[in-house]
Each structure stands twice: as C-alpha cells, then as structure tokens.
Image (cartoon, rainbow, N blue to C red; front, side):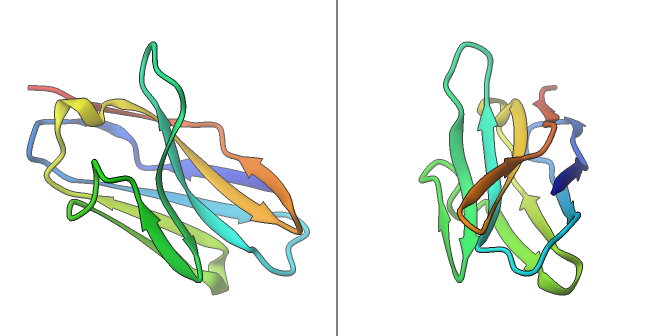
Length: 112
C-alpha cells in the first residue's frame, strides 16, 4: 500500500491550502485515514483523522476540515485561516487491517 500526498506549498497567513492523499495498492477497506504534522524540533502530532467519525487537534478546530472519498481511497484536508504556527511537514496516514501506513510528507509553510 502506498500513500501519495500532494497540495503543500507556501501561503500567507490567513490563506488556504488543500492537501490530498491517495492510497493505492492492494486495498479492500481502510479503517482510518488522516493527517499528522511535524514542525522543526517538535514531535509529530495528530492534525485530523477520519474513521467513521472525525477528530481534530484543538489547534485546528474550526479552521481545518478533513474529508474522504472512499471510492477513490483518498483523503483531503482543507486548511483555512492558516497561521504561521501551522508551518510543518504534513504526513498522510492510513490504517488498513491493523497496519499503519505513512505518506512521504508534504511541506506547508505559512509566512508573509
């Protein structure tokens, strides 16, 4: 199973970005898909996850929205009202059959 993420980049504070992550390979069903992020010098942290219900980090509630297209095995993260503290490498995550998979990471930089 491979996860291919895209959509990162440089954006000004207050701007928006949309991340996408498509899973490919031998897939029958996906238990959960989501996003983590890791800023320089910090531990990787959960941003949002979708597993029937959705869960968000407190720091992104009301600004970020996670969604899934199960037919395409794809998860999206719409990020609005971005702040400099959202700057990080964002990693796509999926859990299939009890195994965790990670994408390669996509850089999101929020700066003026």
